[in-house]
Amino acid sequence: MRLKDKAAIVTGAGAGIGAAVMELFAREGARILAVDRDGSRVREVAARARALALEADVSDEASVTAMVDRAREAFGRIDILVNNAGYGIRGSVVTTAAADWDALMAVNLKGVFLCSKHAIPVMSGGGGGVIVNTASNVANVGLADRAAYVASKGGVAALTRAMALDHAGENIRVNAVAPGVTWSSYFDSMLETHPDPAGFVAALNARSPMNRVAQPVEIANAILWLASDESSFATGSILTVDGGMTAW
Ligand SMILES: NC(=O)c1ccc[n+]([C@@H]2O[C@H](COP(=O)([O-])OP(=O)(O)OC[C@H]3O[C@@H](n4cnc5c(N)ncnc54)[C@H](O)[C@@H]3O)[C@@H](O)[C@H]2O)c1
Image (cartoon, rainbow, N blue to C red; front, top):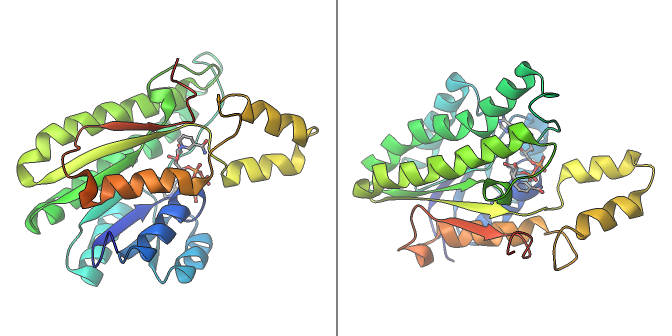
């Protein structure tokens, strides 16, 4: 029980990495508020892990303050915040519409800011806590045709380091995980309509020297380590978990 009785908020918990984090945290004894903008999906997965579910949009400040209030009401404290909600879009700076850039930044980067902004005072009041952000290995290297996404994840890595410095004195550690390609609901939906599903999977696998993509639980295990006391001397760290994709 590596998180026994810890109170945790997990955003983007309705699918993929966030759902795997929620299941792992529940197994390790945490009390969890599972948050997603897709209410029906998060209620379904949260029920399996006996977590509380909340429909909320991390890009909306009123929604985020309701999320923090709900956690405080249910648990009386917040020990762990996993800022995981996010999504990607294709496009260079030329082909990305300004509205799409703003919408993505509002979730991937401003969402981390808002959730941290409102959770940190509660953590601090309880004696400290841990924040784990889901960045991406594209925070370390470029990726073609994903300008907004790459910029947002670079921002998440930079914000992770800035928050680590600002809040170390309040006993709050802030780290990020930088996953490589991970099998998510997005790939599931792409497979259904792809003209060459096998070729699509082979191309994804080929991006890692291990010739496969990650399963969500492999990223969730890294997040669990960063959220637990086992990583007690880690703060401001970006932990890359990408099968060696950016090792060269
Ligand atoms: N899958 C990958 O290859 C990969 C690689 C690196 C990083 N990541 C990052 O991992 C995180 C999780 O992605 P995933 O692959 O599990 O994707 P996913 O689409 O399976 O899950 C993301 C969840 O976040 C929710 N969400 C999106 N916007 C939200 C918002 N505004 N408020 C609340 N919830 C919201 C979605 O409804 C969804 O349930 C994201 O930040 C993503 O950028 C994914």
